[in-house]
View 1 (cartoon, rainbow, N blue to C red):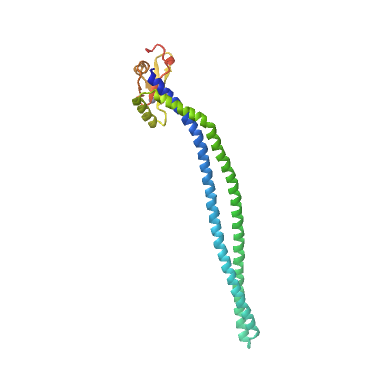
View 2 (cartoon, helix red, strand yellow; view 1 turned 90 degrees about the vertical axis):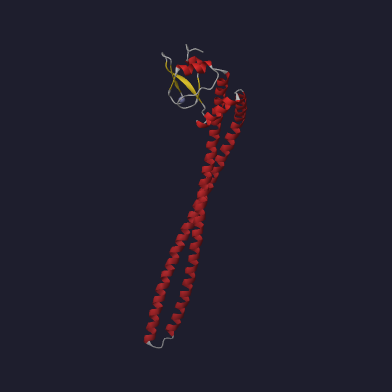
Length: 249
Ligand SMILES: [Zn+2]
């Protein structure tokens, strides 16, 4: 293999290492984002419960006022009962009084049920608050892990970036441009190794797509210093000369 292909191969190796390091950091950054959205979900639930609590409280206040109005009415009817002059009048007032009392007790029951609901909501809000605290602690841990992996990777990443620049500088601009185009098309894997598929016969395949590579292609890669691509997957091929003994170099 010629100098250009060697340099491209080195560039590829460095890029793979950079991608691997970045993947490790990205994984941890993603975990932080997931945790943040988990907390946002809890916040939304807390807000919903608080809104519902406020509405319930308003309804309870309204019903409370209703009960007080009814009590005043009942007190009035009781006084009227004392002043009734005839049996007919007395029994009419008594019927009205009993109806009022029955209605009032229904409203009181509703107030009691509502108060129970509101207590339940308050307990739910408390529980969500506690859950939020635990998730916040987890978030701090995950953020710490991002800082840690970033700090740990920095020296290595800086070295690899410098190494990539150096490797890229050794490649002619047109070959570099071609490499980058192939790399974008193949998720950062611009190159594919040629493997020997038969130890006895000179049969070769592209390690990127497993399709066979002709002897002529292998010869061209070994003898010329240019980017030769796999006909099937389009990756730039390279070969370890040791796997092709007896093939013209
Ligand atoms: Zn291929």
